[in-house]
Image (cartoon, rainbow, N blue to C red; front, top):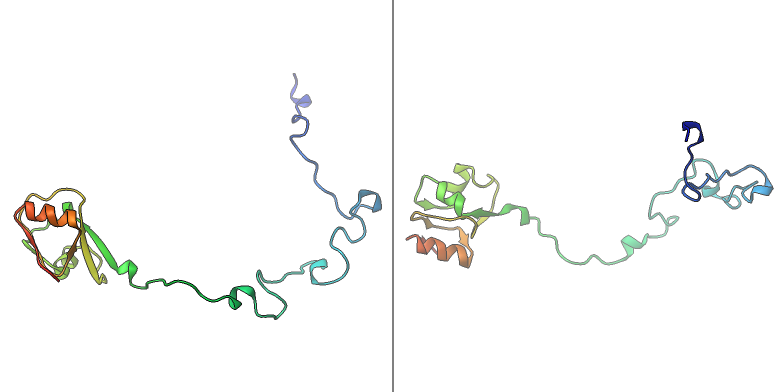
Length: 145
């Protein structure tokens, strides 16, 4: 075997379609673009979804569902993060000052992730059932919001 004899296997590479090379090629004259019109011209371009001025389908159909704008501002706090805090009474402001949650957060909820080994009192912060059980088992409490 020599380097100048290497070629790809049969059928593995298709030859490129050469348009505009005479009638015998099957793609001569109009080169598969049909006759006249914007799309037959070089640089003929229209926006995706444009329907010639008619109200496009994506604007004719009704909007569905609901996307909450505040969803990203409702944050989760792990039990292990609560355990590291130097205070015993935890509320939204305390979490913000400690840098556990973002400053623009609207609400927080404690989730059962990690462990808590000390007494903590939650005020104005939600907790899942598992997290609430873990906090109460450690001697803490979850005050109703």
